[in-house]
Image 1 (tube, each protein chain N blue to C red):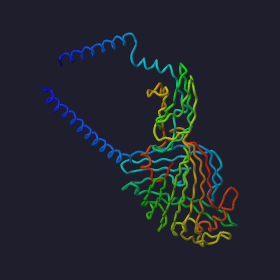
Image 2: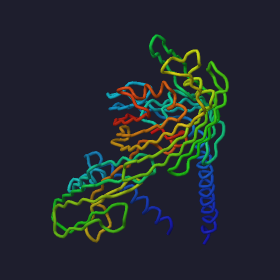
Image 3: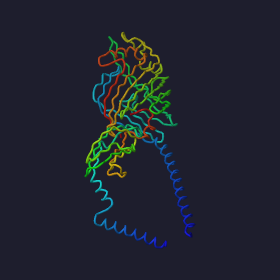
Length: 144
Length: 286
């Protein structure tokens, strides 16, 4: 019995490998599939970086977000800062949203279909700083 | 039924190896953190600025032009060099030192300090010339700096003069600074008291009977305390470019202000009895 289970598993594994190799040979891969999905959606974040004086400080940024989808639908915009949607749109193909945010780590924005958990497209707003945490330990007096 | 007992030791082995690897990883992280903490005192920064500067003081004619600014510090195995040229309440030039002890909040150093700058005065009064040329007084002392969140305090006692042509020089200072974050702006305010001994101030500002002229009579300077305050605002434009503006004011001790020479030069055009400095600059931080 166990012998047959093993055989079936090996058969499935081999089939997957052959399909992957064939797919790769004709220029098709799971990665390119993901690219195709992303091409159906666009998400623009401005600015894409927030600069604080020191690492670990809250960085304040006024973010402008705009998205576009190939087909109209119910979409929601999320950020990694909160579980709830920043804003949702009904039967829209594009949308804009602006909000002042503060964070001490990178913020990931994502567009989702309403009611679904998978991301259609994501963009990251990176945190940057002038002085890292260790600089403070080196400074005997405020020199900046 | 037969394979089950074989799977248990295997899964146990996997679990144990996972635990061991997690533990050793945690140990590695801990060691790395300790090393990083020790090594983090090595290194430093350099801030080069260019901008507009206005300065009025009794020592120099009014400065009102674009200027370079430089601030930096580098420490290696306790040895450090500090440079403060402009845009800083501690406009102390180049200092070297050794950071010999640290706690979570305090740093203790032995370092050099330019306790007083050079003075060149030559005043023709009737038929006599009052001529005074004094070099820097560079001293060495102990410094304790405390960092408490956004507040910094610093105390320094410098009893030893490295280069001076007089005795009993003594310098002490006490500084308090506090920063506030307003959005991405950093506001900073500080106040400092600098004590200079009688011997030091009399060396620079005293006028002996032989030197005295008709309008610049003999003068003996006492010890005195200068008070400096500064407020500044900085804004990071990028992770390397920093906008900065500041205003600084120094009220010299009566012992200095009452000196006949300082009273005279403080009343000249383009000079003032106190020091006022203002700057707007853009820095590149390396």
